[in-house]
View 1: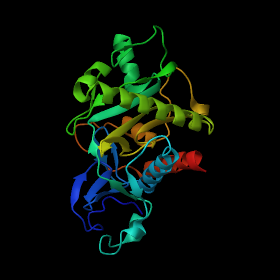
View 2 (view 1 turned 30 degrees about the vertical axis):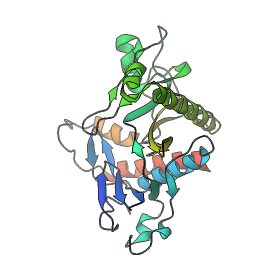
View 3 (view 1 turned 135 degrees about the vertical axis):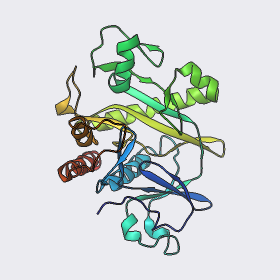
View 4 (view 1 turned 180 degrees about the horizontal axis):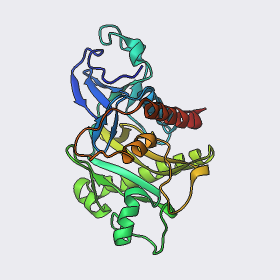
Length: 291
């Protein structure tokens, strides 16, 4: 069974409804519920994808615990039974989907680390030879591994797309010291996860982080190293100069690319076989990373 919304299950004020996550106010803490909604090209699609929310939430919880010794994060607990019947009406429907978190002041920078030149980074490089103002060697090929990972931040926009910015602009927005701290923490986290994934036959091509501040200290928030926040490639699929089949919602993107959808209105519901293939992708990456 897929979960499209938790609004009828949670007796707390809904503060924010994103494409996938819903944020509720518990007073001292936040409650994040991860639904099975799936989006592409800025549209939330129908139907929702079973197990997707479970995978995203459990993967984030797994990585937050694994990296907890490196830096603090916002997790208080992920146990729906601790919420109680006064707050959640059908706890079984939210099992593995919830995260109770500390309330952090979000830093409005998306911290992106790229270990390979692909996606939006490749498009920048093709046009300018640079990525976020960082000059890269000439003659790089699509999907090439970079000699060292690069930090390519984006200014967050709640409406519209985030804006790629150079480090100099980030320093103007948040200050030199905080910008450098976020850069160092992001690169360290990427390198840790890259090596972990490598041992499991997976390439972590790039990823993004969000950070917040609690009691004057920078902590990790939101999600971390999930298929929605990272680009995972199976080693056996790696090649240069092609579109590599990433371990996420690729079946949805492939299906939509093969239709006559104009991207100017919500597309028709996804076929059942596409939904099932997408569920399988999310479950596969979870198993490969955690088992």
